[in-house]
Image (cartoon, rainbow, N blue to C red):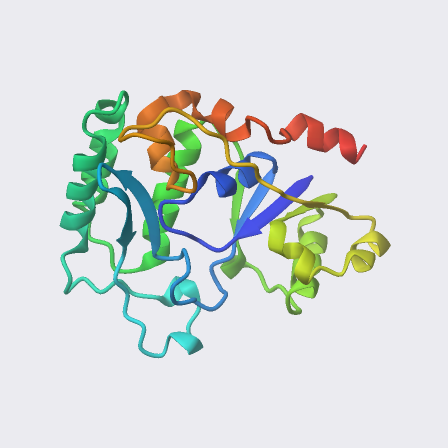
Length: 239
């Protein structure tokens, strides 16, 4: 079984979707500390004026003592209206906007009190639209022990993983020998961002994956994996 994990993020980029597409099980790490100025509550989309940040305002008082799943949204700020309007203006003329607009219209009409349910709802929709099949589990339902590499190893052992996919930064903290002792293979994702046709001029990489969705629809998975390893190729490395 191939396992990977990541913190819940808002409107995730293509690299995360690629990592999930390589795995059999994806664990949402929702019990780690919330990080300011990270991707937990913000991401970028492409507009006619260039990249624009969409940020979900959150209540950060005492955030150092809180897990991400406990972080509340600051709804005294009318962020939903702003995000939906910005997305509409950026993508209303894109090839697939009309196909997916109802989901986002409904998304920004709902009452969200906490950040993680919002992020989960968006992620599940994107996985479904791109045809990425994976079993989703949540760290808050488990009792993983250890820190950094040790925590990941404990998760692998408890889930019965044969292979774990680290992100690029995993090289900085992973203890490879510990995984070898447990006969668990390790793969470090090195995502090569594909170029594709976009609205608004020259191509910009590292936008939210909704940019790909509105421009290419359900054919997006072919683009996500273009120039990168696919699941079958990864499995062959660990036979």
